[in-house]
Length: 558
Image 1 (tube, one colour):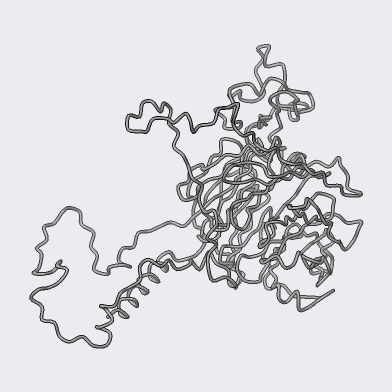
Image 2 (cartoon, rainbow, N blue to C red; image 1 turned 45 degrees about the vertical axis):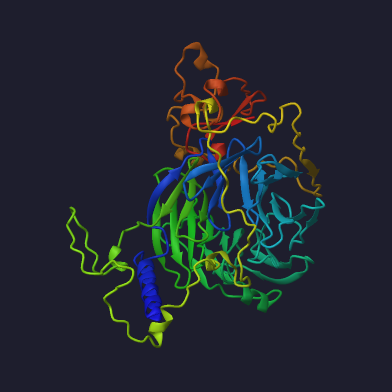
C-alpha cells in the first residue's frame, strides 16, 4: 500500500512538472525598480538573492522570493560595473568604473578590503570553490588572479603580448582558467600553477580569426560557450578541449546565431540546468533562447522598443531570467497555469457552496465498524513509522561531487521592520538603554585596507565602456527622451546655465526624486556642475549615453 502511494505521489509530481511544458521563460513577469539606474545584476548560488549594481555606486540586494529590497550597500562613488557572489553567499565582490575592486560582507554591509587597479575592470569572478581567489579582467591588460588573504596578485600569461584585449573565466569547479584574446586564441591554464594545459583558435568559415568577447560556463556539466565578434555563439565541451591539448582543433557542439538579422550579442549565459542558452541582443532589448542539445531557437522575448540591453542573468534553479535595460531590472518567467487535475483527477471547481453528505466513517481516523483482517506484505508496511523530520538535501543546490548542502550558506537576509515611533507600540518591551551603545562610545568600524595593484605597461588613461561609448552616432540616435532639435554642445552637456534665465530647457526638467535616477532629493543635481560633464561638487552628472541608458541624464551621488 505504501509503495502504491509513493508511486502515485511521484506520478502526480511528474504530471505537475510536465504541466509547465518548457523549462524556459515565456513572458514578462514584472520589474524591479532600484530607484537608481541598474547596470549589472547577478544571482547567488541558490537564486534566493539578486544583487544589482547601480550607476550611483550602490549595490541593491533583492529578496527574490518576496521581490522586495533586503539590503542596500553604499559601495562605490562611481557606477558599479561588475558583481559576483561567493560560494557560500556571505561575501560579494564588486568593481566600479573608477578602477576599484571591493569585497563586502553581505550581512553587515561592511567593506573588507579594496584594490585599486590602473585601468577599468571589465569583469571579476570568485573562484567557484576557493573564496580567497578572485579573477579580475582589467582593460588593456592580461587577466589578474587576486589572493584576498595576503593581497597578492598573479598576472596570467597571454598568447600575444601585443594583444591585451583578453577575457577570462574559471571553469565550473575552478580547476582551470580559460582566457581568450582579440585574435581568437583560447588558452586553458592550470589555476594553481598558471601552466598552459590546452589551447585552440576560434576561426570563421574562411579561416580568419575572430575576437573573443566573453566566455561563460554552465553550472552543470562540462559545457561552455564563447561569444565572438563574428556574431556566432559557439558551444564546446570542456573535456574535449583538455583531450585535444595544445594547439588542438576541437569542433564546437553547436553554433548559435541570428542568420536573418545578423544580431551581435551583448551578454550570453546558460540556464540553471545547462540545457538552454540565452543571449541578449546588443541592438535592442531582445532575448534569444536556444536549446543546447539540438541548437534550435525556441523563444524570443521582446522588451520595450528602443531600449538597449545591459545585462542578462538566468536563475540558478528556476526558469526565470533577469535582464537590465533603461536602468530597470525586468523579470521573465513562465505563465503559471493552475492545473488541479494533476493532483486530483476528479477535482471539480464549484461556483457556489454545495452541501455535502458525509458517508459513515468517511472522515474518521479509525473505522470502528471495519473488520480488521490480518495484514501481510505491503499492507503491513503501512503501519511502519515514516521519518518526517530528516531533511534530504535539495539536488539542485548540490554539485555532483557533493552529498550535503552547505549548512553555513547565506540564503536569505534578515529584515528588521522599521517602526516610526516605538513609543506608540504599547505591547513592545521598554527600550533598554543600558544595552544600546552610545553614538560616541560605540565601537568604530574598521576602515577597509586599500591595496594598489601595479601592472606594467598598462595605460592609466583608459575609460570604461559604460562611460565612454564608442560609436556615439548610432547610440545617440536611438536614445529615447532626447529632443530632435538638440545639436552641438546640447548633446554632450545636457545641463546648461540658460534654463535658469527663463529660457525653455532642451530636456524635460524633472526632479531627480521623481525620475528615479538619484537616491537623493530634488533639483540638487543642477548645482555643482562642471563644463567637463563630471562635477566636483556634491552631485555629479553624466550623460545618459555614458551610463548605457535610454533615459534622461543620470545623477551620481558622491
